[in-house]
Length: 280
Image (cartoon, rainbow, N blue to C red; front, side, top):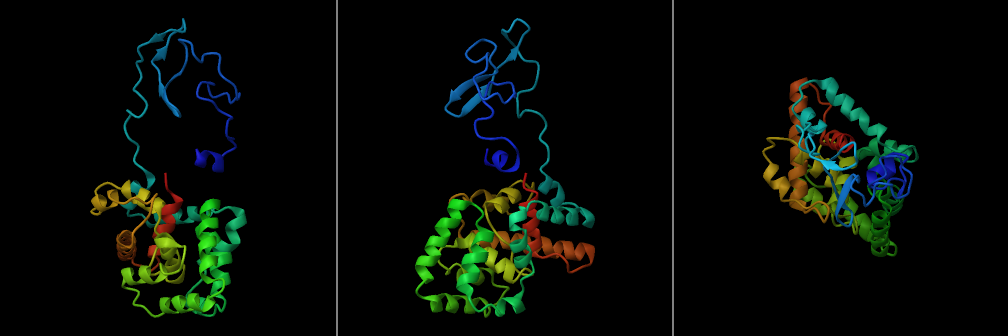
């Protein structure tokens, strides 16, 4: 429902379960009759009824039940095993199509961030509060909660934050666990936020992990890590060990693509951008 509201002209209440898709915002004539389209199972859950005959009475449907048709392979599953570089680059370009115009400037700025430019940032408190957190947390309530925890922790002690950030430029980038542990010390951002910060600072080594990445990877058949992905609960919280596994998968795919296409273009960060862009 949130996707429908955000990415279409549909408004809450514009379509009711029995309105025959006319969007008339009122109970349909068939509601409560033998000609109704749905039966209510419980609040918010409806089941499609049997076929309705010409006399408006229910008859046995000759169609396959919804969901019983042959499963369509998710785009990420098809792409994951694709050996055509243009297909991968097309998927990557779709990331920018998903960025709202109001967020485009900050997206481009953070996408162009590197170790050299990041090391020149003097006011990390303002950078994280005014740029990074709004970029990472697009959900309004989640962003406000994160901002509140961040401000409470560092508004009167910015040196503490500066000390944590300094450590991010000293650790071994091969050590995913250490990187996430250090970045996760920043109050409020959690493992997802920690991974995102590492991804924009060190895109050759890190990618952003969140529930969309878990959902996308979970749809890929025969992925060796499938069992561990199923054990994750990203809607509640991601553990550092979860983040390590997800970034390892991105690193492995980036190495595979670079070897296959004889290039150094692909990075964990670009893999995470694709996973976010073509989520089904």
